[in-house]
Every structure is written in structure tokens, then in C-alpha cells.
Image 1 (cartoon, helix red, strand yellow):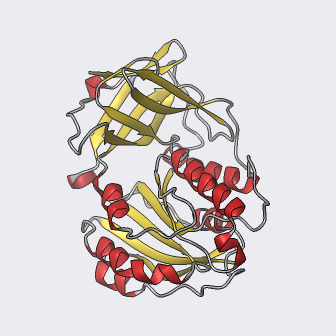
Image 2 (cartoon, rainbow, N blue to C red; image 1 turned 60 degrees about the horizontal axis):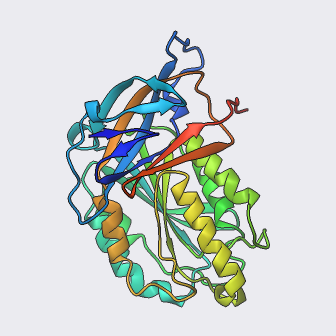
Length: 313
């Protein structure tokens, strides 16, 4: 089986996040073939729950017509299972969130011992941590509380995500980092429509930090919480944010609250992940990306490729 940017044959979706720049030193020299790049890859079966066995030899990465050497393909298990997971909850979430708290607590307690979990609440463009990263999953689950539940408690969840990522120190022993955002996705600083510059900024910051963002929609409090225009664009923004960072956005069924979070949390936990290493020319963090989506026999590969190199300040 070969997975390529131009030709795919197999039975899985390949989700690739943007290379993690913190693994590269500023003094690292380019070689004739480029520089080492590391990224997180998630595999999702096309049908059912069984993922086919994929080895390093099965993975092919192309940049245009040039093939890039794959130097590593390591499953995120065992000694490589380390993960920092931040659960960020919108403090303007409505009353329906209360019925989902048991699902979130169970999800936290079921995480592997190699996963450090933080719980925070998004408001006023920042994140207040109820529990910093810890391996004590029981303590993390107990830190959950009901949101404040009033409009204005969260100016923009994308401001909060950007602020949190910039304050998140890198841990070389836990290179994988993920965020689960539970929010309406409504951006009160932007009236709707595409593109939302604040969403684009959050995407760029997450990509540059190597953070995979998952999201679950939950209705917000106040008038915006039942405004179809706002909700429609908010759910699109969450889908964009998650897809462009290698995660997934759950629930796109209008303004009503999900019946339960458990099915989405189970999907998030069950996705096999790999650390992919390749050689890439002139790698830098970028502000704009292009998605190469190619299909063969209804099988898709999403590969985020560099469009323009750019240095970050």
C-alpha cells in the first residue's frame, strides 16, 4: 500500500499537521536534501474501526514532482505515547453543558498514564487554568466546574486559544500536544463570513507550535447562542480550525446541544497516531498553506504543504 500526495491506494485517511518548528534549532544547517521535519499523523479507517497496518515503507511524501525521504514512522504507543492534552471550555457555554460533565470526567479518567491533562476555562481572550498539566487524572476530572454561562464571558475562543498556545512551554519529553476545545465557536469580534482573521491567526499559531486542535460544539448563553447566522459560521470556524491543525471537529447539526459528548470523545481517543519524520527543503513556519486533496477510489489524503516560507518574529 502506498500513501502519496498524488496517488493513494488503501483504506484510510491520512491527516498531517504542519511541521513542528520547535524541534529545529535556529543554527541547524540545511543539507542538500533539506532539513529534518517532524509532524503528527492521525489515521482514520474509511469503514468500520479497523485500521490497516501501515509501515514506513508504505508512506510516500511528494512535494510537487519531488519525492521527500521518509526517515521515521513511529506509532504513538509505549515509550512514544507521551502527550500533553489541554481541555479548554468556553466560560460562556449555556446550561446544557452541565449534562455533559460526566462524559468529560470519564474521558479524563480513561486517559493513559502517559498523558498529562490540563483543564482551563476560556474567557476575555485568555485561559484560566482550573488544573495545570498533571498525570493525576482524578484531580483533573475534579477540577471541572459549570461555566459562568453569560454572554461576554468569552470575547473570542480563538483569542483564548492563541493566548494559551503562546504561553504553553515546550516539553521535549512530551513532544505531542493536543487541545480539546468545547465551545460554541462564536467570535463576537467578527460578524461572520469567510475568512475570519482571528481564526486564521489561531490556525497559524497552532500549526507553528505543532498543536493538534479537536473541537466539540456546545451552545453558548445569551442571544448569540440561538442566532442561526452566528452559529452557522461558528461551526464552520471550528471545522476549519480543527481540520487545518490535524484534528477533527465534532457536531455540525445546528443550534441544538449534542445529546452526549461520549461518542465524540471516544472517536478522538481511538484515532491511531504516528510521528512522521521527513526531509524537507527550507522548512520554516508559514502563514499560508494549501491543501492537496486527491482522490482515488473515494479514498482521500489530506496533506498540508508549505506554500510560502516565512520567518516568525
